[in-house]
Length: 500
Image (tube, rainbow, N blue to C red; front, side, top):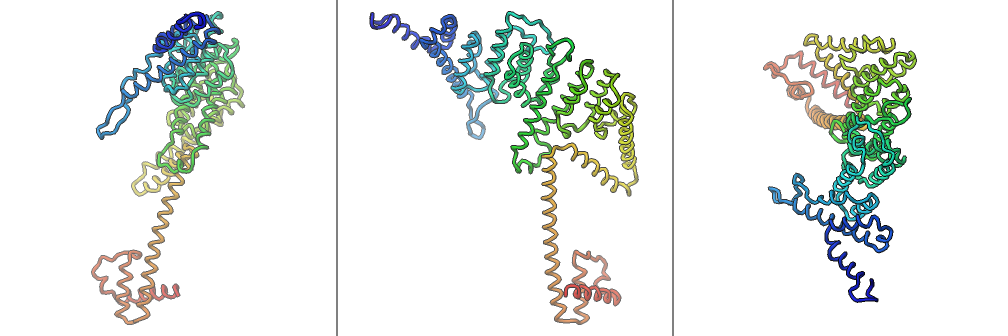
C-alpha cells in the first residue's frame, strides 16, 4: 500500500484523507478515535490516535479564543473589557468528546491542558463525562440515595473515578463542590485508591466554607457495627481545612495585619465552617455506634476562636447526651468542657440551667454567667448619673468578648491600630508641651526686665489667657483685686523657682 508498489496507493491516499478532511473536523476526529479503540496498539503505532487527539485539542483551543474575542466589548469610558455575562459558545465540543473511551479521553484532556484550554471548560467536560459514564448516578448526585453496587461495573467505575480525579484542574471553583463530594462518595463506595481519596479530601477542605450539610453526610459502606455516616472522612476534611487556613496565615505578611477590615476572609470562612460542623455534629449525635472520642475529635478540630456563639455546639452535645444516657459522669464532664457557657445566648443559657443531663459543675457555671448577665442588665436600667460607668463596664465586657472571638491575626491588627492612635495622641501632647515651654521662656524673659506692679498685672492677664488654666468670662477679671494679685504673684514665683 506504499508508493514503492504503485503511485497514489492506499497509504498515501489515507494519509491525505486524514490530513485534509479528518483533522479539519472535530466530529470526524472523534469518530476515528472511536474506531481506533479496537485497533490499539496498531493505530497508535501509525500515529493516527495522536494526530486526532492533537487536532481535537487545537480545535477546542481555537474555538475558545474565538469565543473570547466575541465577548470583548467597549465600556462607556472607551476601555476594552470582557463581558462575562454573555453566553460562552466555545464549549460545544464537551458533548462530542464524551463518547470516547476513558483512556483516550484522558489523553484528550491532557492535550487540552497543554494547549491552554480554560480550567472551567475542562471542569465542565469532566462533570459531563462523569454523568454519562458512572452508572450509579444516584449515589453521586443524591446523597440520600442508597443503591446496591453492581459488581460487574465496579472495576470500570473505579477506573473512571480515579482518572477524573487525576484530571481535575488545580484551580479552585473549576468544578462545583457538590461534584467533588459526589466523586468522594463514589470513591469511598467503590474502594478507590488512597491517593485518589486523599486528593479529593484536600480539594474539598480548601473550599469547605461553601459546602452544605447534605454534602458532609457521606454514608458509611463498612460493616454493620460501624457508624451510619463516614465520620473519619469528614474529620480528615476538617483537618485539611484547618491546616490550609494555618498555612495561609503563615504566608501573610505584616501589611495584611494592618488592614482596617473587621474580619479577614479566612475568619469569615471559619465562622461558616463552625456552623456547618455544629449542624453536622447534631446530625450524627443520635447514632448509637458513635464513640465519644470521634465526636470530640470533630468538635475540637476547629480553633477556639472559630465559634463566636456556642449554641450550636451545646445543642449537638445535648442530643448526644440524650442518645447516650449510659455515659459515665467523667465522660459527661469531659464533653461539656467543650462548651464555653459564657458564649451561650440567653435562650440557650436558660435551657442549660434546667438541663438535668448536664453535670452539676456545668449547671453551676451556667447559673454563674446568667447571674452576671442579669446584673449587667440591671445596671443598664440605672439613672442617668450612673450610666457612664455602666457603659464603660459594658464596653469592657463586650470588647473582651470580641477579643476572645477574634482570630490572633485580627486581634493583632486591632492592637496595631490602637498603637498608631496612641502614637498620634502622644505627638499632639508633645507639640502642646513645646508651645507651653516657649511661652514660659518668653514670660520669664519679660519678668527679668521689669518687676513693676503694672507689669505683674499684664503678666497675670497673660497667664489667665492661656488655655491651660481656662478662659475667664466675667468683666471683673480685667481689674483683678489685691488678693488675686497676691495669689498670682506667688504662683509665678513658684513657677520661676521650679524652672531655675
